[in-house]
Amino acid sequence: MWNDVDLRKLFLAQTPLVDVRAPIEFEAGKIPFSINLPILNNEERVQVGTTYKNQGQAAAVLLGQQLVSGINKDERVNQWIKFIQQNPEAQVFCFRGGMRSKISCEWITENGFPRTPIVGGYKRMRNFFLSLLNEGPLPKIFRLGGLTGCGKTELLLKLKKHIDLEGLANHRGSAFGFMGQQPTQITFENQLAFKILQLPERVMLEDESSAIGNVVIPVRFFEEMKRAPLVMLELPLEDRIVNIFNSYVLRNDSIFFTNALQAISKRLGGLKTNDLLNKVKIAYEYGMNLREHREWISILLCDYYDKFYQKSLEKQKNLILFRGSREEILQWAVDFQ
Image (cartoon, rainbow, N blue to C red):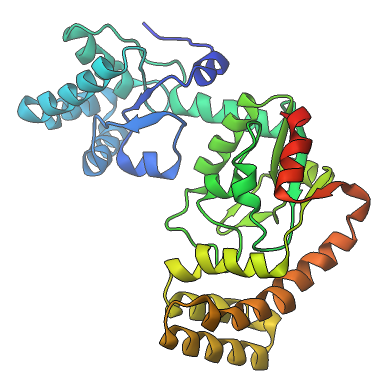
């Protein structure tokens, strides 16, 4: 018996999902609201897959039952049961809705929690998200622009109808934007598609380039972004310097900035890069005082980020819908929300 759920309703309800694929599959592409509680670990999956290829399904199923038996089986079933007890509406899936999720659901049902696997499994859900990105209706997009350090992300998060692309990408979208491990491209796309499903009419997002760290905004969505109206957040240079100091300098050491500056050295130029590297080194030697860091932050903003953003903005000035401070944009956004 199979569970042919309406995926749109499933995701809009933020239904908890049990992904019984192997960890390596889960890491390659995650579905929103899913937890990985595998029936086979990575090594077991390889063994079963090899047996299936060489000896057929019956032999592969037999090997799987031998590998996952006794205490090993009890531990995995208990994990599923515990999650379902905490999330009674939870659904179960594997890659194609095949043997792994079928057997998992049989074991779960035997323990008093009737479950049937989602038809088509991960592959069907992935195709659902791809269809939203490639063919489905997109919301009316508004971009929140502004010079580096003006606090766009903080303002964006104040708005109800927003998509935080940098949050989805786990990266702040610049050479200094490293926030830790990024999701895979597939996981990023799945998360973005869910946000589009959740916000079908209009949405605000930050003005981004096509790549955010190592992930790339899907082409169709990015093309729509480039045509979207711009709302420009304005903030004095001194306040932007303070924001950069608080958001980056206080949270990172000099090595972080050395690596980031070297990454943009071709665009900065050798002399300016070396000058900034020296200023960063000296500033950190004096400590974590804004006074010591103000000069190099100002140079980086004015001679690098502002320069390139203003050049890009000149080509889009006809798209500017509104300009203002944080408070003015929040007031303007009352109607938007």
